[in-house]
Length: 130
Image (cartoon, rainbow, N blue to C red; front, side, top):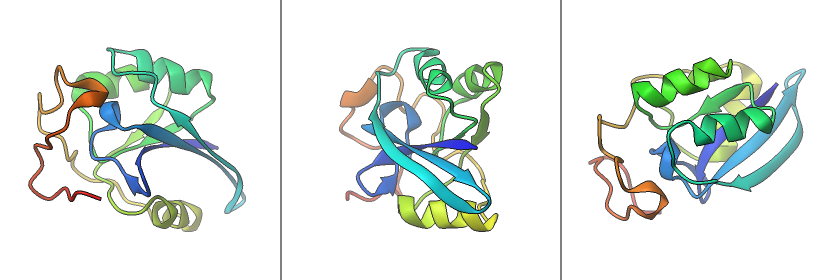
């Protein structure tokens, strides 16, 4: 299984659409078989789901995303897990152990609208500057 994780430095990005990159992780039999990072191609409706589908992703993990983005991923058969925060390596360990649990999206509707990758101000009170 190939998993894409919205990435901001060492951490899961709260905003999947404006993260600088995605960590792609192949996991088989509870082990990481391949890990790499790809730049975010840009935040346009449907572009990231299509891009990650072309990269072979079966699942996207992010802090949050809106319902429209979720439906684009689902159209490509990509499972969406949101409500995730913390270090990328810790999230990967949880995936390997089968203990990763998603939750409510960390993005409120419209929070990232119109900003794309260049948004500098976070609308989430709990997001830290890394």
